[in-house]
Image (cartoon, rainbow, N blue to C red):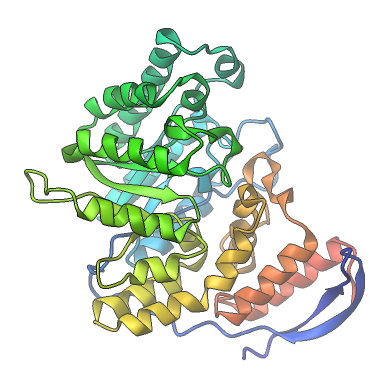
Length: 409
């Protein structure tokens, strides 16, 4: 244990504070940084964005980003041997981070990655289209062309910055597509502009309800068939697919379908990058038929543990690697609990507790998305799995947070 003791509130079933209990926060885990590149898995942490605490980062306002804190966080991830997936839903694309700030984030992060020879991939979507424009789009040729043009604009921004492209799911496309053939038409156009293999992102409705019916069907089986047809049609242009459906059985089935594809002319097959922030330990550990690589929002919160686990996999200690990841699973499930849309709140809260940002805040005011009770439990779970990296600091910040929220010992 850490010796850092704090009086945490006890809640009844309705969320009322009924008292406090003294809790000794757990000490940091035995985390290590790698001495050589990690090779057994390809792993990206999808990083969040830190706002300036005094700026008008309120709902509907343009994002004002604390670039020093935001980029320092990415350097910590790179120092632990992981890649950074930037400008993704973890960075609040379409949830507070506007297109102007997104472009600057892509350029700045890619430049920082280049300066330390680190891996970076960035999301390309269609969120530069204003909500009123999206609302006015009609199914058919004009709407599909508008979506494809928006995608291509963002693809070029990412490529020009020197980052790998992650083709994100598009709310605008979900609105205008009439069926699988319209998805194929838009993705055909977008992938034609890719100058290196991309990562395709399938984001489920638990993360963004506006993506209902993506790939042209509410049936996961039918959507998967369309998705695999797209991969087959463009296999040389696809490095891998990131699947965020929180369904381990579906992911394993899709992973095996990708493994069954014939190699491309370059001798490669598309990777399955897990986006399952619930079941990542078993999926990354894999089975006798293969494993998933990783592109995870939870890795932005647990990157020291994730790195140490991947180092164990590199050393041939699969059981040890799985054990480390499994020790963080309860924290991951809590951070990504329904409504999953607000998982960014938990990642920012842990970042603040660990001293990596000056205030507990997110752009667009999204830090208000979780309750006091949820955040107190998050702190407990983080301590339990060794993810409070400076327990005395975390205790001091928790005390201040509790006082601000009307809880005193």
